[in-house]
Amino acid sequence: MEPANSRVNQAEIARALGLSQSTVSIALKGDTRVAKKTREAIKKKAEELGYVPDPNLFALSLYRTQSKADKIVAGMAWVTNFPTKDGWKDMRMIRDYRKGAEEQARKMGYQLYDFWLGDPEVSSQRFRQILLARGIRGLIFAPQAEFHTTIDLDFSDFAAVTLGYTLWKPELHLVSNHQHRTIRLAYRSLQNLGYQKIGMVMNSWVDRRVAGSFTGGFLSLNPTLKGKGFVAPHLYEDFDSAAFEKWFNKWKPDALISSGDCSKNVKEWAKNKGLVLGKDFAFAELNLMDLDGSIAGVSQRGELIGKSAASVVDSLLNHFEYGIPAAPLRTLVEGVWVDGATAPRKGVKST
Image 1 (tube, rainbow, N blue to C red):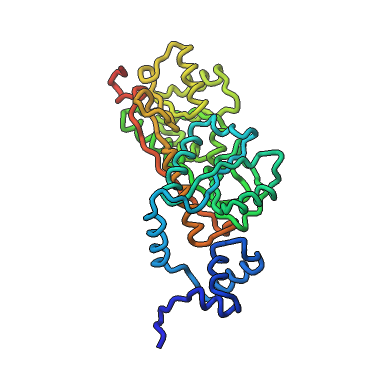
Image 2: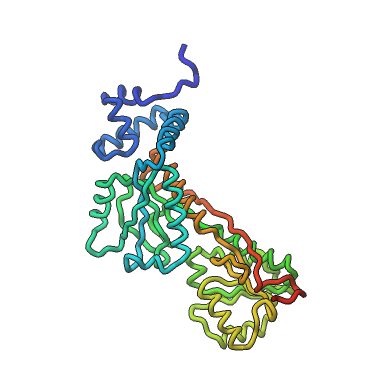
């Protein structure tokens, strides 16, 4: 009698369709040497029969791959979509994503190649053909230059993830820092240091790029309107020193949370008013890049986010999960608080 837990294998799929096992094997890997119609039929039959890859065979394959030192066995694409080919390099966070993704890809046996989707001389169809011709099936989409970007590309032969929330359509698997928890971490850390009236200063554009996670996290912790510690968030489209000063004088925060260019505006305003961060009020950066102790805040761990993206793509490839997912998954990486001179313990002078 056949065991109840007998696993459906590729040979059974081949017999059911009148195909060779080798054809089934490479089709399940998404190999375009097999016609798309045949690949779809094989995938459908595999699902009908309840076929799943054997994890023991996968582990053996992985061992064989990793035991061949420094051997690159496949390609993975780092896809950018800025107006210029190297525009993304101006953002240090994205450079960290790229660095982490490349490091993790190499550990798993891939070479990470750079592709610019915004090339005006290369159509989306041609871009797809180039990727397939080079045998590249795994795609990591860097953050888009603009929020709510739409990409017109046939994803049926690719396993893809996007970094952050700026890609609106299609909805792919996503890897990002957990910004909602990042601002909560900053808020709680400042509270633990003795600060009671904590304000948030944010460019609305920055908050939109993280799907409102910063304002949502801030308001989830900020006391109600009746609470003595409440400070209304200061959101703006274009920074106006007079408007900010009016807000600051009204709410009298003893600590501020901000990020990126918003942080730069706060620092310049304080300097012009003769105020010292860490002395006249505390300050925390939500996307801390330099961990030298000069600024307090949260490191979003960009390299780890990049590594996680490469790992997700590898998993999708190994399980033959191509195309736009029916239920996109979110992988959210926790940030870490870093003490700094701009937020000393309250009552202790910053040095």
